[in-house]
Length: 207
Image (tube, rainbow, N blue to C red; front, side, top):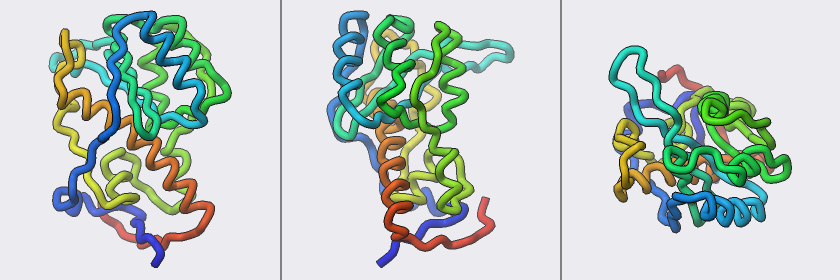
């Protein structure tokens, strides 16, 4: 039976979906040496999920630097604590790499925030927002896209927590890893659906 996807996933349906989170290994990167080892491993992969987190601002005009860079395979996610290491030469090497595809959502914003720390020339990036329209999907948020493709909910409860904290708690780490991992899962599923045409699109006007 073909998978049913929606042009716009009904927002009210998300609350009733089962919650999904990354269940693999999470590695927090706190030093230049650790970053070098992590990047050496990540550049052996074909595709990576990527995302960033920034400490939220609650005062007008206040702007924080990007705190965290999450880079995930299907079963391991590295959390680069940029507030501790900044963009090390190894991290720049990863971001500028032209061979390994780094898959994310709304990558323009992520790349801009990373460049505020240190200028680099972006390598091979794939933005899911440029792909989903080929399936007829109009949604652009991670939560709605994941719900649409997998029928599961990604919790956003940790989004506005302090990403510059001395130590990230387990909920923060799991949330951050899930967002990067989810981008990779969605990319793989979109490629599968495009290759097999194993889906039917339901047009709706839900917002």
